[in-house]
Image (cartoon, rainbow, N blue to C red; front, side, top):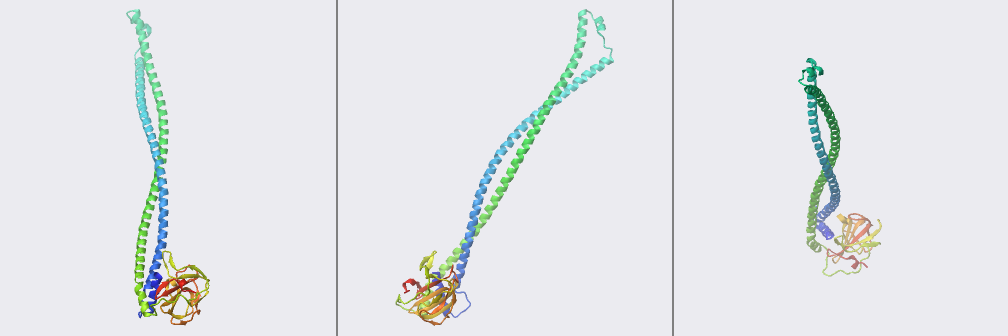
Length: 383
């Protein structure tokens, strides 16, 4: 359909009096180029979005793994902190006990010192004096034992206080070392948890950035698709007007109410049929493609008048010959044209050479047969 519009507009151009304005065929070619560019960009964006989705999916797993590890470490940190708190409580209790033992020891030493001073400053009675002053032997013995007992008690209290202080100090020292060990272990676990937390946050940041970029690409993709749909709609609108353009061609050029003979056209080039007439790639292929090497001679399929010879968008170098009675042939993608518009050619006359100009993927001749401007299957007319 697009080529039909191009061909129809081409013929109208030959009759138009204005020059330099954009024609329907130029607009179709321009829109087709935009659609082609949009398709390429759509493919790139789709691939990029798919890659972003895969990366986001991978990061989702990494984040989940980091969060799981972080949860375990946080539990471990909690256990260490709980243990540390318990040991700290014990250490504080032992510190208080040590302070009490210290006070008791200090008090005992103080009392002992005072007693020694008192004994020194006062003439302490010896055993003989005590016995002589006693009312009875039993009373004398009791007094001596009492003095000795008081002295021994003071010394025992001081000794026990010193032992207790030493024992509690040793226990507190061991608890202090345990406290330092648990604190160091807690710091290590806390550091590991902090590192895992940092890793998780970095992964989340990367994932969020990828999501933002992916969403941006999705918006661009939607815009590209919207533009492409508009251009395709514009092309469809041009195709819808091809019937009116074809009517103008029929009224301006040679036409016939009868169907032209299906005989008499010779093959324009020696080659292999590589693409037939009909639907191709979602749209109508309005001719046949004959594969041949670049520079292979192209001959007129029948005698007639050249109504166009020159560049024509997707057709590249194009020659159109009117054979009369509404029959015309077109020869596209030529590397070189050797006839000019208005020339009279005979059947089998050299008109150009095979090439790959215009929208072409390799050297071949695109050959069309048109009846009153409408494309028909060339194989029905070639002998």
